[in-house]
Image (cartoon, rainbow, N blue to C red):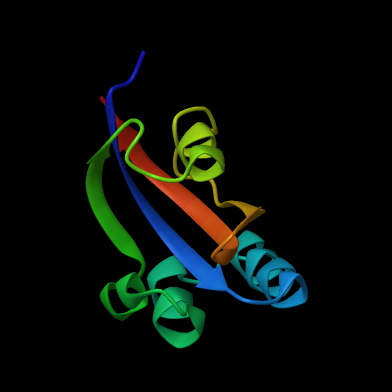
Length: 93
């Protein structure tokens, strides 16, 4: 089982906006550009890059998705106490 992962995410306050962003991504939009435009997380300035992190470092729902969803395919929206996330897992080790 993977112990570390690297991911990008876009965090927004409204589920509708998250769904709209996911639809744009499914049509081929650039994840990093959308993160810079919409994400309320400080990582948005870096295109949504969260870097590499260990399993268990993120809130449980986010962690579960990162360590189980398909790689490279945008996933979401995932609701946590921070808002609605669109997640793109780059790799797991």
